[in-house]
Image (cartoon, rainbow, N blue to C red; front, side, top):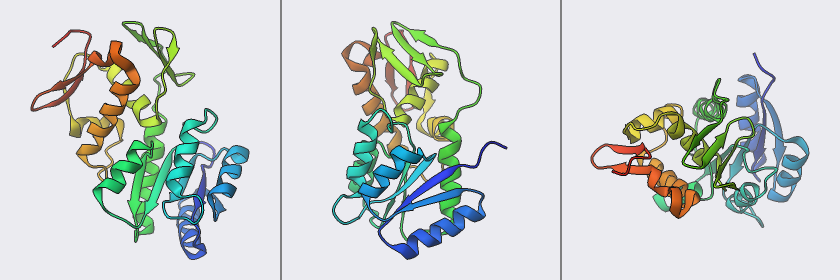
Length: 231
């Protein structure tokens, strides 16, 4: 058993925060609470929680704005974020994924579903026993510092893109379907749709830049492969 994981719940509605806190405390997590984005940001800097549960719709500064701020700051860029949203439309979700959200859960949700989702995200954030530096065509991934660089320049990767790249670099020259990638990288999280994989592949290619984007190849009718061999 590792140390107790600390979860920050950010929602302007006290009853929702309480319901979540009760469910998480019963599941063995320690909870912190904030009712607005400014306070949440302060608490994240001071307490470095293991995860942030973030409500999308909040007065003044929205959850998505806070998420973007966290992702753009090196101190907070790798904290996992689950977005709580009352809206179930596709654009909204893709918008969230583009901002670097690890997962989203639509209100109303059951405490059991939330706990399951949260454990799934935490599991995939900490891959076991992968601590060797991997290098492919001047693209270097260092699991200890949790950084990747191309030709000596650090790549700007969100947590999911980093895990995707780590998986690809340690499983080269084989085609994986979207479902397999969801299982391997997202930890078999049944709530994430296959299109999510495409969103993150796009972002990873963009982050790799012109010289290295060729490594991530689309395999027609199957999915994706990572290879130095041009298709």
